[in-house]
Image: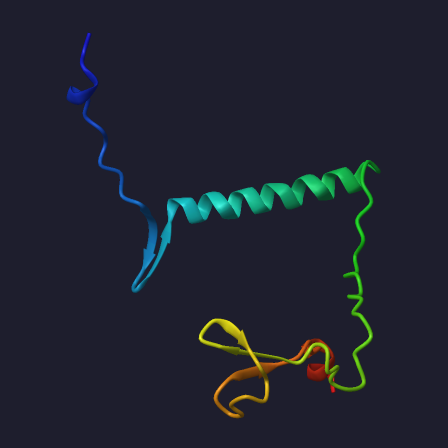
Length: 106
C-alpha cells in the first residue's frame, strides 16, 4: 500500500476563465450553476402545477414611529459604558430609540 504522504495531488489552476484583469474561478461557476439549476427547478415545478410562485415582493411592515424622543429611551455611552446624558454634554455618544427607516422615507 502507498502511504498517504507519497500521494501526488494535481496542480489545478483555480481560474477557469480569464479576461484581462477579470478572472472567473471554478467555485464561482459552481455557485452560478447552483443558482441556475435552482431557478430551473422552481420554474419546472411551477409549470407542472406542483408549486406556486409569487411574482411580487412582500411589503415590509414597520412599527409606527414615535412622534417625539422618549425620555425613557434617551441614553449616553462613554467608553463602552452607559453614562448620564447630561453629565458631560458633547463628550458622550447620545442616542435614543429612533426609527431610522421612517426618517429615511421622509
